[in-house]
Image (cartoon, rainbow, N blue to C red; front, side):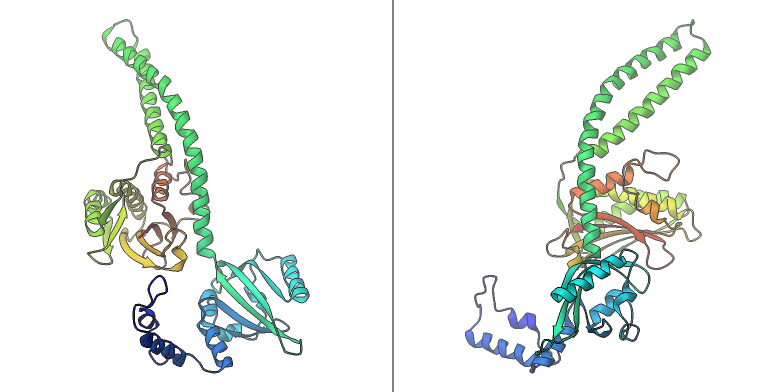
Length: 404
């Protein structure tokens, strides 16, 4: 605030039950300091609240022409005040907002003086934001409608996190069914493997087998082993692992990860960098399971980076705090593990399917590596996501967010 009053320090004398931990005179002094810091007139106070709101706010005239916006609105959609003021709100319209949608909105404003609901708006850079929008009529004392007040709350991150949680629950249910099925497959497969072994032994020791028959037995044996490997991978994905949480020092965790992957990176002429916020950063997770996740992500990143001129992979760990993370952490505090690579960009279609089981862009493999990684992260009550990198030389970044 303008006079430098620290509200946190002022209110620190009140405990969780609202009971003062300091004297009544101290509390009264703090109350007076807060009142002094805030605007004194009603109109100035309303203007101050409008400008300092963390939600996007705008005021229009009765015809819907924008007259005022606050800083949060500018940050939310990327347009400057000069680009916004004087326009109707239609410049935010996305492909999902139909004419019927807007007609229904204006009908509610005319009839009831308000409208509230979810809306998808377009930013200056073409991306789309899901918002909860409340529009309220501004009416004079004489009952004349002067304009409208709009308040937009950005739900984009929350929607994305909720979608991942729902998808995880669906895959978990599928995983239980798959585990039962795989167990049923393994029993006859074990019998097949035993009989193949007996045939191989007979073919090697007895002369009546022809070379063609021996080659057929070897082919059956190879395919049976491949099938056994596939079944094992499916079972690994479908099985729920009992997590053993520990307080893990990230510097040591990433150092061990780097040691395991450095040789692979050097073989492919890829530069592997590891960064961390600070040496004492810690996280609470199962180190063995999260190591499996990070090995998978970094190995994929190395393979992707090999296809670029820069050949770079960056692994980082940091702590973050933001209200958008409250879907996975009530405090909004999370640990972020990020893996960026300089390989070819991932298309939107591929990106939307990367963590689904049995999807792969490689010529070999069952497509369960990333799906298994995502499942492990979900068991930690976290999320894993992939997005285009914000700045070159990196093109893609995988992010694991865990409750801090």
